[in-house]
Image (cartoon, one colour):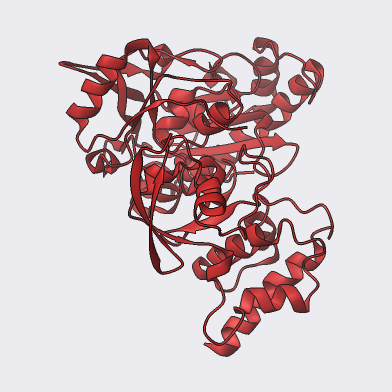
Length: 289
Length: 159
């Protein structure tokens, strides 16, 4: 239960981090919060030859909140985003999701961008990025690209990041007018990865009828499953059945595929209802749980 | 394998130590600095036994490399008591029988110290959520929950 030896790099600037990653190539790994990486190193599921620790690159801790959305730097911790009132005002789904992420001691170290790059199919934040149509900015020596969420999550624990690249930030679009969000999930124990989870976004028109509704589901496929359910109006039970039909959950030691499908229906209805309620109340604050 | 000279401010005292990059903070505290109050259970972030305070925030010392936190302040269970004796959280755990074998206790004490600093009067739900990342196999948690409320009362009385 100890990590294998590695060459340690502790850059203070983004450019120096990119140089170290470029030289390490496929043998390099980025260490940010380490709350997923270090367990894998301890269990020797991963043994990179080079570890590039970005914890001293203070420029990456920046969080920019504008009317358009929230840009979260690679070093911004879960706890920092969870507590941020300006972030919650622009995009409440981040706080709703982060309350379900692990435990306080994990949230003090873990980073939002790190969770996206880790791309666990049962994690909350990839679903948030996918639901909102956000993006991840990837930098390499002499190059930078912005990858949309739908292209970023490639498979279970697999994101579209190449050797030599560093995910420098992620962008979460703001919540629009008459819109609401919610996150609902069921886990065996509080803070565990969910057996299944659903986050929802509902947009109402001026007469408070549903003009758009979308969900992103976790734990029921290799990547977050994003589905548009706008065609069901406010008939959330009908939307939930459609989501159940689309998903192809798998069984594991924690739950059968059928149980996951059942949860998906219950959680979809619950999340959509809560999102619609908050869209109608116009303060944008939906409910989690 | 020693290679990195680092300084950790542990319980208010600057400690200089030479460690390999792969040294976990939990092992650095226990082996290099001789502070064995921090316990190590699962070494993958699940049990919470190794929780310490890093610049005041609760963190898993088994999921942190010592080199990463060079120059930062760490409080371990050994640093919770003040000059006048045990902290309110420690006294409450003793009074409410919030421990039995004691293995998980250092992690709980650090977690609860941080919890009450951020939220001096937590609700029942906030307490349960606050300690949900720490496992105890003896007490059944009821007395631990009681101890957290008792510690909050003690801190309010003494402030």
